[in-house]
Length: 349
Image 1 (cartoon, helix red, strand yellow):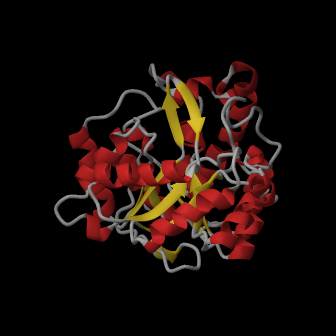
Image 2: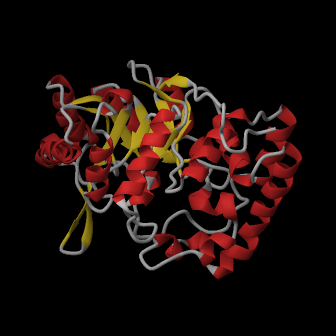
Protein backbone atom coordinates (compact mmCIF):
# COMPACT_ATOMS: atom_id res chain seq x y z
CA UNK A 1 0.00 0.00 0.00
CA UNK A 2 1.20 3.51 -0.73
CA UNK A 3 1.47 6.06 2.01
CA UNK A 4 -1.17 8.13 0.25
CA UNK A 5 -0.28 11.36 1.99
CA UNK A 6 3.43 10.70 1.98
CA UNK A 7 3.53 10.70 5.78
CA UNK A 8 6.46 8.82 7.19
CA UNK A 9 7.98 8.27 3.75
CA UNK A 10 11.68 9.08 3.81
CA UNK A 11 12.91 10.67 0.59
CA UNK A 12 16.20 8.94 -0.31
CA UNK A 13 19.26 10.75 -1.58
CA UNK A 14 20.87 9.88 -4.90
CA UNK A 15 23.95 10.72 -6.92
CA UNK A 16 23.03 12.62 -10.07
CA UNK A 17 25.69 11.92 -12.62
CA UNK A 18 29.29 11.03 -11.83
CA UNK A 19 30.70 14.45 -10.93
CA UNK A 20 29.65 14.56 -7.28
CA UNK A 21 26.20 16.15 -7.36
CA UNK A 22 23.84 14.60 -4.81
CA UNK A 23 20.12 15.40 -4.74
CA UNK A 24 16.86 14.15 -3.28
CA UNK A 25 15.56 11.17 -5.28
CA UNK A 26 12.45 13.20 -6.11
CA UNK A 27 12.64 16.85 -7.00
CA UNK A 28 10.15 19.69 -7.25
CA UNK A 29 9.40 21.39 -10.55
CA UNK A 30 8.53 25.01 -9.78
CA UNK A 31 7.41 26.21 -13.24
CA UNK A 32 3.66 25.94 -12.69
CA UNK A 33 3.84 28.22 -9.67
CA UNK A 34 4.52 31.18 -11.94
CA UNK A 35 3.94 30.37 -15.60
CA UNK A 36 2.40 28.37 -18.43
CA UNK A 37 -0.20 26.52 -16.35
CA UNK A 38 -2.54 29.46 -15.85
CA UNK A 39 -2.20 32.59 -13.68
CA UNK A 40 0.70 32.84 -11.22
CA UNK A 41 -0.06 31.55 -7.73
CA UNK A 42 0.36 33.77 -4.64
CA UNK A 43 4.00 34.03 -3.58
CA UNK A 44 3.23 33.37 0.06
CA UNK A 45 1.45 30.11 -0.68
CA UNK A 46 4.21 28.92 -2.99
CA UNK A 47 6.96 29.77 -0.51
CA UNK A 48 5.07 27.76 2.11
CA UNK A 49 4.87 24.87 -0.36
CA UNK A 50 8.60 25.01 -1.13
CA UNK A 51 9.45 25.09 2.57
CA UNK A 52 7.17 22.10 3.17
CA UNK A 53 8.90 20.23 0.34
CA UNK A 54 12.35 20.89 1.78
CA UNK A 55 11.23 19.94 5.30
CA UNK A 56 9.83 16.70 3.81
CA UNK A 57 13.15 15.84 2.15
CA UNK A 58 12.41 17.07 -1.39
CA UNK A 59 15.39 19.39 -1.70
CA UNK A 60 16.08 19.40 -5.47
CA UNK A 61 14.37 22.54 -6.79
CA UNK A 62 13.97 23.17 -10.53
CA UNK A 63 13.34 26.57 -12.12
CA UNK A 64 14.35 28.55 -15.24
CA UNK A 65 14.80 32.15 -16.32
CA UNK A 66 11.99 31.72 -18.86
CA UNK A 67 9.39 30.80 -16.23
CA UNK A 68 7.47 34.04 -15.92
CA UNK A 69 9.77 35.10 -17.50
CA UNK A 70 12.04 35.72 -14.51
CA UNK A 71 9.33 35.71 -11.84
CA UNK A 72 9.78 32.06 -10.89
CA UNK A 73 13.47 32.56 -10.13
CA UNK A 74 12.60 35.56 -7.97
CA UNK A 75 10.00 33.46 -6.13
CA UNK A 76 12.44 30.59 -5.55
CA UNK A 77 15.03 33.11 -4.39
CA UNK A 78 12.63 34.41 -1.75
CA UNK A 79 11.94 30.86 -0.60
CA UNK A 80 15.67 30.25 -0.10
CA UNK A 81 16.00 32.93 2.58
CA UNK A 82 16.45 32.15 6.25
CA UNK A 83 18.94 29.30 5.93
CA UNK A 84 16.98 27.32 3.33
CA UNK A 85 19.64 27.79 0.63
CA UNK A 86 22.10 25.54 2.45
CA UNK A 87 19.56 22.72 2.48
CA UNK A 88 18.70 22.58 -1.23
CA UNK A 89 20.15 21.66 -4.60
CA UNK A 90 19.23 24.52 -6.88
CA UNK A 91 18.79 24.02 -10.64
CA UNK A 92 17.94 26.69 -13.17
CA UNK A 93 18.23 27.08 -16.93
CA UNK A 94 19.09 29.50 -19.71
CA UNK A 95 18.71 29.47 -23.47
CA UNK A 96 15.11 30.47 -24.26
CA UNK A 97 14.20 34.11 -24.60
CA UNK A 98 11.24 36.10 -25.87
CA UNK A 99 12.29 39.17 -27.81
CA UNK A 100 9.65 41.27 -29.56
CA UNK A 101 7.10 38.57 -28.80
CA UNK A 102 9.07 35.88 -30.61
CA UNK A 103 10.77 32.90 -29.02
CA UNK A 104 14.50 32.59 -29.62
CA UNK A 105 17.01 29.93 -28.63
CA UNK A 106 20.49 31.25 -27.89
CA UNK A 107 23.74 29.61 -26.84
CA UNK A 108 26.12 32.45 -27.68
CA UNK A 109 28.88 32.77 -25.04
CA UNK A 110 28.07 36.40 -24.19
CA UNK A 111 24.41 35.49 -23.78
CA UNK A 112 25.27 32.47 -21.60
CA UNK A 113 27.31 34.64 -19.25
CA UNK A 114 24.73 37.43 -19.10
CA UNK A 115 21.93 34.93 -18.45
CA UNK A 116 23.89 33.29 -15.63
CA UNK A 117 24.68 36.62 -13.97
CA UNK A 118 21.02 37.64 -14.21
CA UNK A 119 19.82 34.35 -12.69
CA UNK A 120 22.29 34.65 -9.83
CA UNK A 121 20.94 38.12 -9.11
CA UNK A 122 17.26 37.11 -9.28
CA UNK A 123 17.84 34.04 -7.12
CA UNK A 124 20.07 36.14 -4.84
CA UNK A 125 22.66 33.38 -4.55
CA UNK A 126 26.42 33.22 -5.12
CA UNK A 127 26.38 29.93 -7.03
CA UNK A 128 23.92 27.75 -8.98
CA UNK A 129 24.24 24.05 -8.22
CA UNK A 130 23.07 22.77 -11.62
CA UNK A 131 22.87 25.05 -14.65
CA UNK A 132 21.09 23.65 -17.71
CA UNK A 133 21.00 24.76 -21.29
CA UNK A 134 17.20 24.73 -21.58
CA UNK A 135 17.11 24.22 -25.33
CA UNK A 136 20.00 23.71 -27.72
CA UNK A 137 20.93 26.50 -30.13
CA UNK A 138 21.19 24.68 -33.44
CA UNK A 139 22.89 27.65 -35.12
CA UNK A 140 26.27 27.21 -33.46
CA UNK A 141 28.34 24.22 -32.33
CA UNK A 142 27.49 22.95 -28.86
CA UNK A 143 31.22 23.16 -28.08
CA UNK A 144 31.02 26.98 -28.23
CA UNK A 145 28.28 27.12 -25.60
CA UNK A 146 29.97 24.50 -23.44
CA UNK A 147 33.22 26.45 -23.48
CA UNK A 148 31.55 29.36 -21.72
CA UNK A 149 29.76 27.09 -19.26
CA UNK A 150 33.10 25.51 -18.41
CA UNK A 151 34.46 28.97 -17.61
CA UNK A 152 31.50 29.62 -15.30
CA UNK A 153 32.31 26.42 -13.43
CA UNK A 154 35.95 27.45 -13.10
CA UNK A 155 34.85 30.85 -11.77
CA UNK A 156 32.61 29.23 -9.14
CA UNK A 157 29.37 30.71 -10.50
CA UNK A 158 27.95 27.26 -11.24
CA UNK A 159 28.88 23.86 -9.85
CA UNK A 160 27.54 21.40 -12.42
CA UNK A 161 26.38 21.60 -16.03
CA UNK A 162 23.21 20.10 -17.51
CA UNK A 163 21.42 19.91 -20.84
CA UNK A 164 17.68 19.80 -21.47
CA UNK A 165 15.99 18.22 -24.49
CA UNK A 166 19.31 17.38 -26.16
CA UNK A 167 19.97 14.68 -28.74
CA UNK A 168 22.41 11.83 -28.12
CA UNK A 169 24.99 13.34 -30.48
CA UNK A 170 24.73 16.75 -28.81
CA UNK A 171 25.16 15.15 -25.39
CA UNK A 172 28.29 13.31 -26.52
CA UNK A 173 29.88 16.42 -27.99
CA UNK A 174 29.04 18.57 -24.97
CA UNK A 175 30.33 15.94 -22.54
CA UNK A 176 33.67 15.90 -24.38
CA UNK A 177 34.19 19.60 -23.55
CA UNK A 178 33.18 19.37 -19.87
CA UNK A 179 31.39 16.56 -18.03
CA UNK A 180 27.60 16.82 -18.12
CA UNK A 181 26.07 15.93 -14.76
CA UNK A 182 22.42 15.68 -15.83
CA UNK A 183 20.17 15.65 -18.87
CA UNK A 184 16.61 16.79 -18.33
CA UNK A 185 14.00 15.26 -20.61
CA UNK A 186 10.33 14.42 -20.70
CA UNK A 187 9.90 10.81 -19.58
CA UNK A 188 6.73 9.18 -18.41
CA UNK A 189 4.31 6.40 -19.25
CA UNK A 190 3.16 8.41 -22.24
CA UNK A 191 6.50 9.93 -23.35
CA UNK A 192 8.97 7.15 -24.01
CA UNK A 193 10.81 7.79 -27.27
CA UNK A 194 13.91 8.97 -25.38
CA UNK A 195 14.47 5.35 -24.35
CA UNK A 196 15.76 4.50 -27.83
CA UNK A 197 18.89 6.62 -27.94
CA UNK A 198 19.10 9.42 -25.38
CA UNK A 199 18.73 7.34 -22.19
CA UNK A 200 21.34 4.73 -23.26
CA UNK A 201 23.77 7.53 -24.15
CA UNK A 202 23.35 9.15 -20.72
CA UNK A 203 23.98 5.83 -19.03
CA UNK A 204 27.02 5.06 -21.13
CA UNK A 205 28.55 8.41 -20.17
CA UNK A 206 27.53 8.34 -16.49
CA UNK A 207 25.10 11.24 -16.81
CA UNK A 208 22.12 11.54 -14.46
CA UNK A 209 18.61 11.60 -15.88
CA UNK A 210 16.06 14.17 -14.69
CA UNK A 211 12.52 13.35 -15.80
CA UNK A 212 10.22 16.33 -16.16
CA UNK A 213 6.45 16.01 -16.63
CA UNK A 214 6.55 12.47 -15.16
CA UNK A 215 2.78 12.73 -14.71
CA UNK A 216 2.06 13.62 -18.32
CA UNK A 217 1.47 17.31 -17.51
CA UNK A 218 -1.17 16.20 -15.01
CA UNK A 219 -3.10 13.88 -17.32
CA UNK A 220 -1.82 10.72 -15.63
CA UNK A 221 -3.05 12.13 -12.32
CA UNK A 222 -6.52 13.37 -13.23
CA UNK A 223 -7.31 12.18 -16.74
CA UNK A 224 -9.75 14.20 -18.84
CA UNK A 225 -11.11 15.95 -15.73
CA UNK A 226 -7.92 18.01 -15.79
CA UNK A 227 -9.03 19.72 -18.99
CA UNK A 228 -12.04 21.20 -17.20
CA UNK A 229 -9.71 23.18 -14.97
CA UNK A 230 -7.64 24.76 -17.75
CA UNK A 231 -7.65 28.54 -17.46
CA UNK A 232 -6.56 31.30 -19.81
CA UNK A 233 -2.81 31.19 -20.16
CA UNK A 234 -2.55 27.42 -19.71
CA UNK A 235 -0.54 26.30 -22.70
CA UNK A 236 -1.60 22.68 -22.23
CA UNK A 237 -4.88 23.58 -23.96
CA UNK A 238 -2.95 23.74 -27.22
CA UNK A 239 -0.86 20.59 -26.92
CA UNK A 240 -1.69 17.95 -29.55
CA UNK A 241 -2.36 15.18 -27.03
CA UNK A 242 -5.22 17.12 -25.49
CA UNK A 243 -7.01 17.83 -28.77
CA UNK A 244 -10.30 16.06 -29.45
CA UNK A 245 -8.93 13.90 -32.26
CA UNK A 246 -6.35 12.40 -29.88
CA UNK A 247 -7.95 12.70 -26.47
CA UNK A 248 -10.47 9.87 -26.78
CA UNK A 249 -7.67 7.42 -27.54
CA UNK A 250 -5.40 8.74 -24.78
CA UNK A 251 -8.13 8.46 -22.15
CA UNK A 252 -7.88 4.68 -22.50
CA UNK A 253 -4.30 4.77 -21.23
CA UNK A 254 -5.40 6.75 -18.18
CA UNK A 255 -8.25 4.33 -17.50
CA UNK A 256 -5.88 1.36 -17.46
CA UNK A 257 -3.58 3.20 -15.05
CA UNK A 258 -6.57 3.80 -12.76
CA UNK A 259 -7.42 0.09 -12.81
CA UNK A 260 -3.89 -1.01 -11.94
CA UNK A 261 -3.56 1.69 -9.25
CA UNK A 262 -6.67 0.32 -7.54
CA UNK A 263 -5.09 -3.11 -7.31
CA UNK A 264 -1.91 -1.57 -5.84
CA UNK A 265 -3.75 0.53 -3.27
CA UNK A 266 -2.36 3.80 -4.60
CA UNK A 267 -3.51 6.73 -6.69
CA UNK A 268 -3.04 6.88 -10.49
CA UNK A 269 -0.46 9.64 -10.09
CA UNK A 270 1.50 7.59 -7.56
CA UNK A 271 1.51 4.61 -9.90
CA UNK A 272 2.71 6.69 -12.86
CA UNK A 273 5.38 8.35 -10.74
CA UNK A 274 6.47 5.05 -9.22
CA UNK A 275 7.00 3.72 -12.74
CA UNK A 276 9.53 6.49 -13.34
CA UNK A 277 11.21 5.86 -9.99
CA UNK A 278 11.58 2.19 -10.93
CA UNK A 279 13.52 3.04 -14.11
CA UNK A 280 16.81 3.07 -12.20
CA UNK A 281 18.80 4.74 -9.44
CA UNK A 282 20.15 7.28 -11.95
CA UNK A 283 16.68 8.76 -12.60
CA UNK A 284 15.20 11.67 -10.65
CA UNK A 285 11.65 12.74 -11.53
CA UNK A 286 10.71 16.35 -10.76
CA UNK A 287 6.90 16.50 -10.63
CA UNK A 288 5.56 20.01 -10.28
CA UNK A 289 2.64 21.05 -8.14
CA UNK A 290 1.12 24.09 -6.46
CA UNK A 291 -0.69 22.17 -3.71
CA UNK A 292 0.76 20.68 -0.55
CA UNK A 293 -1.62 17.70 -0.68
CA UNK A 294 -0.36 16.84 -4.17
CA UNK A 295 3.24 17.17 -3.02
CA UNK A 296 2.56 14.78 -0.16
CA UNK A 297 0.94 12.35 -2.55
CA UNK A 298 3.94 12.53 -4.87
CA UNK A 299 6.26 11.69 -1.99
CA UNK A 300 4.00 8.73 -1.24
CA UNK A 301 4.87 7.33 -4.68
CA UNK A 302 8.29 6.46 -3.27
CA UNK A 303 6.67 3.75 -1.16
CA UNK A 304 4.86 2.11 -4.09
CA UNK A 305 6.66 -1.13 -4.91
CA UNK A 306 6.17 -2.47 -8.43
CA UNK A 307 6.83 -6.12 -9.22
CA UNK A 308 8.30 -7.28 -12.53
CA UNK A 309 4.75 -8.30 -13.47
CA UNK A 310 3.47 -4.79 -12.65
CA UNK A 311 6.22 -3.22 -14.74
CA UNK A 312 5.49 -5.56 -17.66
CA UNK A 313 1.81 -4.62 -17.57
CA UNK A 314 2.62 -0.92 -17.43
CA UNK A 315 5.17 -1.30 -20.24
CA UNK A 316 2.45 -2.87 -22.33
CA UNK A 317 -0.17 -0.18 -21.83
CA UNK A 318 2.41 2.62 -21.98
CA UNK A 319 4.31 1.45 -25.05
CA UNK A 320 5.94 4.07 -27.25
CA UNK A 321 3.07 3.95 -29.78
CA UNK A 322 0.27 3.87 -27.20
CA UNK A 323 -0.29 7.63 -27.23
CA UNK A 324 -1.76 9.75 -30.00
CA UNK A 325 -0.41 13.22 -30.67
CA UNK A 326 3.03 14.78 -30.36
CA UNK A 327 4.37 16.14 -27.08
CA UNK A 328 4.60 19.67 -28.43
CA UNK A 329 3.23 21.72 -31.28
CA UNK A 330 5.50 21.86 -34.37
CA UNK A 331 7.01 25.26 -33.50
CA UNK A 332 8.54 24.05 -30.22
CA UNK A 333 12.05 22.60 -30.40
CA UNK A 334 12.80 19.23 -28.81
CA UNK A 335 15.74 16.83 -28.61
CA UNK A 336 14.82 15.44 -32.02
CA UNK A 337 16.09 18.56 -33.74
CA UNK A 338 18.86 19.66 -31.39
CA UNK A 339 21.91 18.70 -33.46
CA UNK A 340 24.38 21.53 -34.02
CA UNK A 341 26.93 22.34 -36.73
CA UNK A 342 30.32 20.61 -36.48
CA UNK A 343 32.96 22.67 -34.70
CA UNK A 344 35.32 22.20 -37.65
CA UNK A 345 32.81 23.82 -39.98
CA UNK A 346 32.31 26.69 -37.58
CA UNK A 347 36.03 27.43 -37.37
CA UNK A 348 36.25 27.46 -41.15
CA UNK A 349 33.63 30.19 -41.47
